[in-house]
Length: 244
Image (cartoon, rainbow, N blue to C red; front, side, top):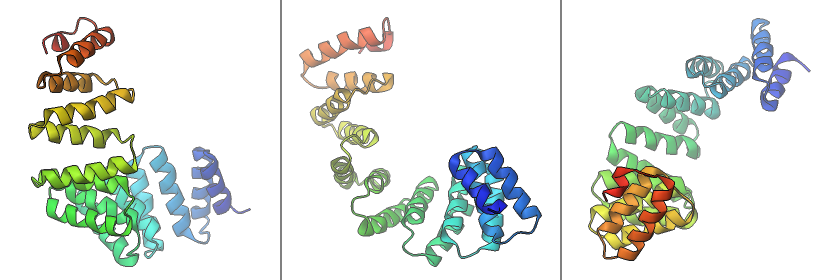
């Protein structure tokens, strides 16, 4: 096998150092399909969390293979992880233009718009994603937090319910639903959701403190007392919890 295919195999097997060596040798020898070589080098550096090197190699991959939607998507994702949001947006728009069915690019574009504070654009993108992928729990979640930013609390809660129905263990969606209910004065509903989270074994300190605060807004004194007792064993002598 030649260095390109061997390098790809080494990448897939997890030997990134050997993959990088073989792929660079293939490039230095002016081998065929240099786009694939640069693309897999980008994947190697991405796995090593060296995003600057990953981006550099994805850019070269796109130069050699400008119509490969996966190469463009990985470059857009790399820019997003570096928070180079304008570059990520432009690359993702190009990806979608080449391949309108590339749902991962469309979903990531929605996240880019969200990070840029362009909530209406983000909502539209997530809606478009859900039209084609109605079982996409993350898309419901991100549309929900987008709608929350747009003060569409009722619609946000509906989206969170859909995300949770698809994935009952979606802790972020459960937490967000509880907090929106809390902010709208629906304390019992917020506490009910907290109990679901707690029963799933979630014991994060900030969550326990929030759960106690939520219960303190209700008349569920026995439940509050029990949770305080359990919390004291988890976080002994913690004044923040003692004072709730």
